[in-house]
Image (cartoon, rainbow, N blue to C red; front, top):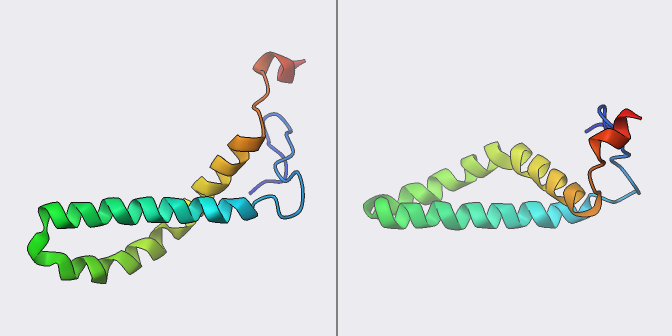
Amino acid sequence: MNKHCPHCGENLVPEPGFYQGALYMSYSFYVAFMVIYFLIFVNFFEEYLDYFLMSIIPVLIILTPYFYRLARRAWLALFIKPQDQEAVKR
């Protein structure tokens, strides 16, 4: 992740350890994904429920970079207000 926004120059690392909260946010994304994944398996593939257990770990490993990046973006959006485009151009 860039230290500064290439578009507006905003500092994307305001303090050391700023993104530790993103770990908790990514955990909530994992939980939401697993609940939805489980409900789909229970409702549509009930006889193949063993496949849920075998497939959830590889799917979560593959999605780890996506969820962590999404969590960092969401965490940053909670604390840094986007600047007005007119103010950036001046």
